[in-house]
Image (cartoon, rainbow over all chains, first blue to last red; front, side):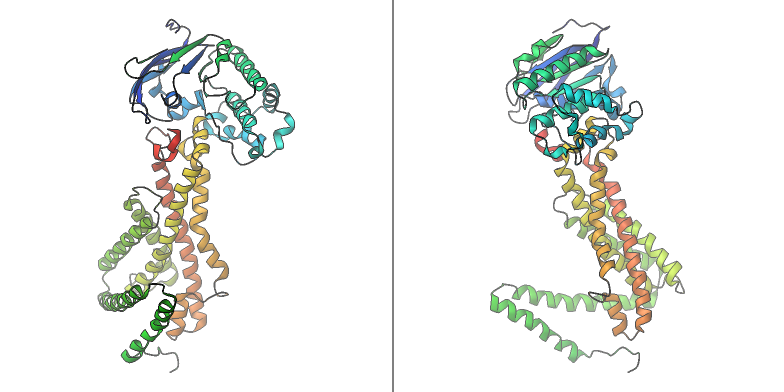
Length: 228
Length: 266
């Protein structure tokens, strides 16, 4: 875990606690993520790694604890403002009815996004190309994409809205080796491409340690707690 | 007899029970096991309608505004309970919301029809208000039950999409707007369909009743047109109010989708 540094720490997780449904174990997590860095969340299956990401995105409540974004308490943000900045990408991301282009444009119809950002087709095409998704796919029905293509498209969609923190749940699980490498390169480039960015990633893949500033948060039961 | 109602004597009324024997015969022949239900249903029809006949006779004679209003409130409550029972996929849904939606839409549309279109003297004539409000309620009850059921089934089905939108910073309304549209369509479609086929496939009950009661068909048609349009307006208003009041119940106070909707994603 990195040393706490007020100047560079982007996300601070303080004693977030929850119990996992499957085995009833109580989990308590404290960790921090610096700007431009990645926090990997690891632990056995069913321990609550996805639950932790969903709590960080305020998509489910925690039993206790608090989170700070750039030193600001999470309840100082409306849930909408928070999720706009701390974006959660599910392991099996949902695509909407319509074309690939319409799926990429969908977030820009939301008030929280369109007030400070416009859809940039050039940027979308560039990101797609970097993930081996041809620009010719833009008019394709999104429901016809394979699992791997859908996963990469969802990552492109997430990056286009420029969050501060990306919460990624097994982003490489549906990808072959080549596509996984491209995703990792894109992630590294995104992290260092602008200030005020960081990631929290749940992944079983070991290659994540090639990402900049990678640290690990190991989830354990109550007896050991969890540390960042 | 001219334009008079042809009265049905007690003997002829008793003779109508023969009709139930036809249904009973079919049930017995095919061993449908419906004989008991048919017999009980027939008894209830006689008892309930006879009872309501006496009640209406009293209410029409007294014609008291507060009595009429109390009856409308009771009708709304019964309709609200019935509509919630028709939505088994909606857990712990409060009858209160359905009641207020039905009361508001029924009173709103009913008063427009009674005061502006029919305009009886006095305006709170029970003989007009109770059947009109009853027709509105009967249809609104079905409409809101359908829309509520669809709202929840769509939310379960599209929980992933709703959460994806929330994750981008959508408000609960933005996230669930597609489900609300589908729910509204589901509630209103039967009413719109009946507008399309009215008079072609069947004559509506009210119009048939008026014609049997000796009213000129032209006049009965005018009433029926008003009734059809009033039902359409009431169903739309009732569905809108109920869905508008209900969609927030899919979310936690922090604007996240509730655990019972997201299911395994928790």
